[in-house]
Image (cartoon, rainbow, N blue to C red; front, side, top):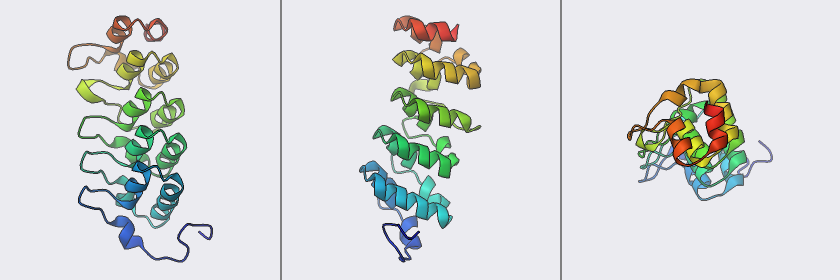
Length: 181
């Protein structure tokens, strides 16, 4: 890694450490929007096989992928999924999977990439799933991709008993309703 931010530095033990909020250096870099640094740390952790440093969830249950999506760093999110697909299986303390957050943010590429991860979680808060989020937001492109890969989500009701179809009707999202039907 000659072009690395930290050439010839042996700090693998520091990369694995987390602070009192359970944040690793990678998670902190992502959360604070230091994309170049986060990319470098991700590459180092991946090369050194410091898997737990990549997967670590903070005190709120967010991992580096959650932070990348929440902070609108789409390219970094794609890189995180590529290097460590297991990031897609984390749920925050609020019950949000990275896929749910990506759909809420209208991140089509990230949502598609997460759908390609066979066992990625699609759950969201209030018992909703990624298809509920697409219906609520009126995103027919993502709804179609979800229906192609996980059609069974259309029949799942949230804690209030609403299915994605019911949300599409409630919010007048006709394009999404057409996809769901």
